[in-house]
Amino acid sequence: MARPIKQKVDYFPHYVKGGKTLFILEEKYGNDGYAFWFKLLEVLCDSDGHFIDCRNLSNWEFLLAKTHTDAERAEEIISTLVNLGKIDAELWAEKVIWVQSLLNNVSSVYERRRENLPVKPNLSQAIILDEVNKCEQKPTKTEVIESENRQSRVK
Image (cartoon, helix red, strand yellow):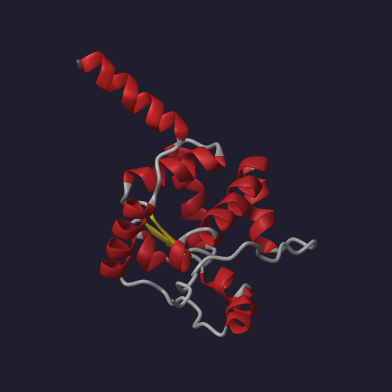
């Protein structure tokens, strides 16, 4: 049986010399802006298809937890990234995060895998992949214990 196609990467280039984007994020948001940007890139790299559908509450909550920001601050930073052309404006209008420059930076990984580079999702694809990801997620040990505790209280 063939190996399933993997549309995730384990790394992305983090260039030592920061550009305009990092300068603006740090100037406007301090370390929150810097950390948010790189943690966002980490989440995107570990997401099938390299996009995040924030219409799904668990995806949005995970992004907020991962970046240690609240919803208002995250939306401010994302809005700045949209204005800088780093996050796709059309998809963000529908609460989906896509960063084309990230795909450009990891394209060599897909060349070595001899796989096609993921392409900008259409919204119906985002919904379908999100449903697949929900089905594949295994509950954490904490979630299992909490579920068992709830069930025992109901009995």
